Length: 433
Image 1 (spheres, helix red, strand yellow):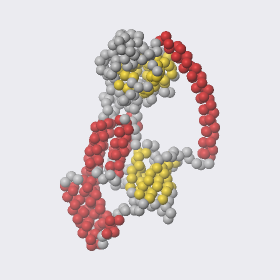
Image 2 (spheres, one colour):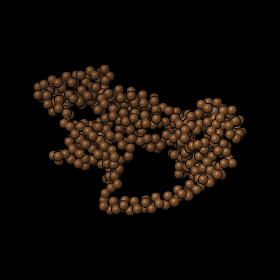
Image 3 (cartoon, one colour):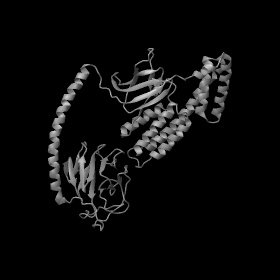
C-alpha cells in the first residue's frame, strides 16, 4: 500500500496512535460494526456519526446529524473541507488528519499501532508514516490556504440546500395531511412488500426484523377455509427448542446495537391468497406480508397406506428405530421416528396402549437435543456479537461454522430450528460483506 495515502490518527484513549487509512471515495465513521471506521470505545459517538469523502483530491467531512455533532479544529461543522493537520473531534475521540507529502505532521504523531477496520474501503498500513514529503507523486489534496475558497463554495451550496429544504417541508406538510385522512378512514399505514409463496401442508419459518407481539391471517380459500395458521416462534408449548436462546440474543443485541431477528411460524393449510398481518400489543397492524398457498397437500398422507393391523406393526418398528437411533447419538432422527410412531399409534393402530412409553422417550430426547442446540447457538452468538468492551475482531467466520455444527443436530431442512439457524447464517454473511 502506498505511503502517500492520507489517514486519520487517533490522539487519545487506549488505542492512541491507531491509524485509519482513507481508501476509497466515501468513508463512514461511527460506533456500529458496519461503519468503515469504528470508534466503539469512545463516548458520545453516534451509530452513524460522520462521513469523509475524497473526490478530485479534496477531503471533506460531513456530519450525519449526530447527537453531539462533529468538530473540526474547535468549530462545530455540518460540512467542511479539511487538510493536513486538521483535528476532528467525534464524541470524545480526537483524530488528526495526516496527508503524507503535505505540510509536516505535528510532533507526537506517526505511531505504528494499527487497528483493524470493519470495511474493505478502509485499510491500515503497519509501521510509522514518514512526516517529510515523499519522492513519489501524490494527489493534489487541498492546503490550508485553499480552505477558505472551498468552504465559501460549501456555504453557497448550503443556501441552495436550505431553499430546497423549505420546498420539501411544504411537501411533507401536505403529505402529513393525507396521512391524517388515512387515519380518520381507519386505514392503518401498514408496511408492505414481503411475499411468501408456500405449498399446501408446508410449514415455514419467516424472518422479520420488525418487532411484533402477535400475528393473524386475513384471507381464505375458495371454500372459506383459513389458508394458514401463524404464531411467533416459541408459542408452541412443545416445539421451541431455541426459544429462550433467541429471546436472550435479541435482548442482548438490542442493548448493544447489534441486529435483532424475530421469527414467525406459518402452517399452510388451504389453497388461496391472503395476508399475514403483524400486530403490536394493542392489536394495531404494523406490517403485512402477502401470502400465497398453492399445490396439493402431501402432509401425513403416508398414514393412509396403513390399516389398523399394519399400522400397529409399523408403529412398533418405528419406535424400535427411534430407540436405536437415540443410542447412536442421532437425536433428531430418533425424534422423527418416534413422532411418526406416536402419530400412527394414536390415529391408525388397533391399540395404542402399547405405545404409552413413546411420549417419555420423546420428552427426554427433546430435552437433550435442546441442551446441545442451545450450547452451539450461544457459542455462535457470543463469537459473532461480543460485548462492546471486548477485544474487537471479525468473529463471523467462527460463528458461521458453529451454526453449521448446530445444523448437524437438526439435519432436516424443513425443521424449524434448521431454518432459524440458516437465517442467522445469512445475517452473518450480510454483516461480513
